[in-house]
Figure (spheres, rainbow, N blue to C red):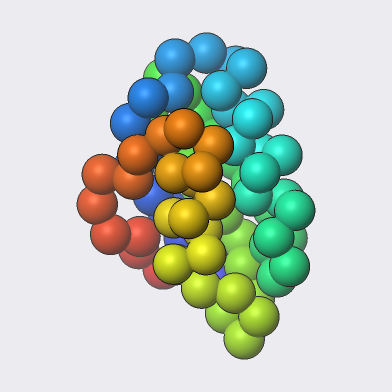
Length: 73
């Protein structure tokens, strides 16, 4: 398992946190999501053998948000 932290632009409330939690939790290989709108970040626990950063970014952007920088394992 790895934890990745991504800075995300556009989150403004707990509803945004729930939206990202739902979007990312549906990805195979994701085992935990903690989104924090106040800090503008999302921490995602993944199995790197199953999923990767590109999939996470695609889901976040598909939910209407923007990833500001690289994820850090």
